[in-house]
Image 1 (cartoon, rainbow, N blue to C red):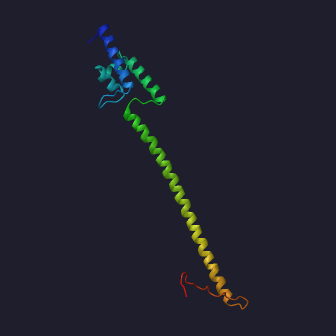
Image 2: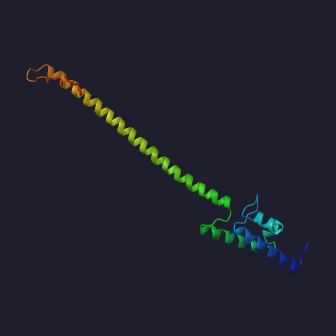
Image 3: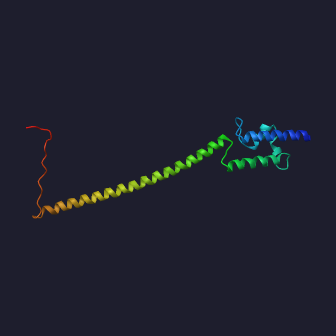
Length: 153
């Protein structure tokens, strides 16, 4: 069915008005900032936006404006903005988790090395004590006296 020039102009005006609303972020419930929602909002058949159909140039304009907004960091669809924000947050959390895991690994290695050093030092002390008991030149220090603090005689 052919449409008149007046109907075509009216349809184009409705499409442009719907395009402006969508790009301002006025997304209808259940819709997105896409051609399907644009067609529904303008009450135009979606197939009219593809190929050599009458409103293909408006689809190209809509996609160009939408891409320009994305490049400028403006996302008209609140769900898309939320998805982008959550993806960025997820990437930061993954990076923090990797850093935390690396720190835990480093601390675990440090702990193992410290325990090994302490064990070696203990063995050396035991060895020195055993060798010291056999020589007469080394004298043992008396055990420290323990005093009770606060007692009166």
